[in-house]
Image 1 (spheres, rainbow, N blue to C red):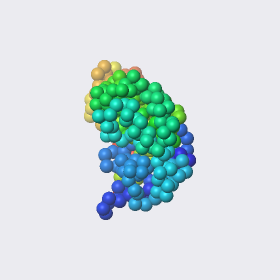
Image 2: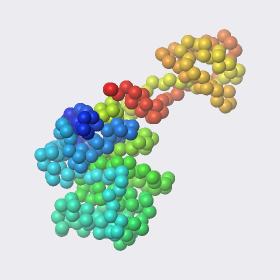
Image 3: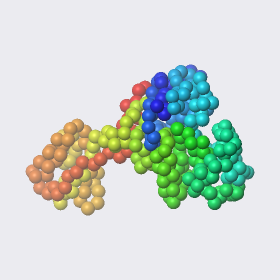
Amino acid sequence: MILRTEHLSHKYSSTWAIRDINIEISQTGIIGLVGSNGAGKSTTMNIICGTLSQTEGRVLVNNIDLRENPEAAKKEIGFLPQTLPLYTDLTVDEYLTYCADLRLMPKTETGRAVREVKERCGIAHFSSRLIRNLSGGYRQRVGIAQAIIHKPKLVVLDEPTNGLDPNQLIEARKLIREIGREHTVLLSSHILSEINLLCREIIMIESGRVVFSDSMEAFNNYSQSHSILLLLDNPPSRTELLNIKGVTQVEFLADRRVRVYFEGDKQISERLAAASIANGWQLRELSFEKGLLDDIFKQLSSQSPQ
């Protein structure tokens, strides 16, 4: 087991930030960690990485209890916080050597580890450059390099693509995918489309509790469709559509298209088709619209325990 949390809970003063968080990850790959602001993501990540001590529960990394044997457990963890932990007055080589020393890597292995991680992250040509003189995208690469230099089992990345331009974003995604082939990556992001592109599984925390933990496919299929797109040669009035049982909202689009929001079962399609025939609306197309990731996020968030 690469990561297991058991009934993980933490209290700030008299308020529980997270409660009874149970996570199990047993294989390599990229797992998304999402939640709204204040949901408990940062608290969970900080406890998993050993920068915050939990109030209750256990964290095991590669089957090592983080509280009982923190030094051994932290050797199995690589962490990239949202604010990059860079010393900008050091060169890339100086900084990565320093990070290897922090991870208690043997001196005989440090030079090779620095060379390998620079090559892997595409920063070898900046070895002697001061970090302050690097662009935002390359600083992000140096940050990722320090997280994987010691080849940890678990890599925790907090908003690793935040603030990157489109070209930098493509390269960062490619690098994260490569890391996910050899490591277990716990990736936190507030951009659900980013999670959808990179992750095979998703864990959602809301109000301090896990409200969803499953594959990306299950997450994408979670929400039932609540809207239908119609193409009508002779569109009716808004009132006529709202009078159909189950219709809650109507939105007129370009090119004779109408979006109809509904509640209840999908027999709404039969009622719309029947109304079209009866009233001469000349229905040409009818399709249920798939829910967006953001819609699913809102739906799951609204169902979280209070």
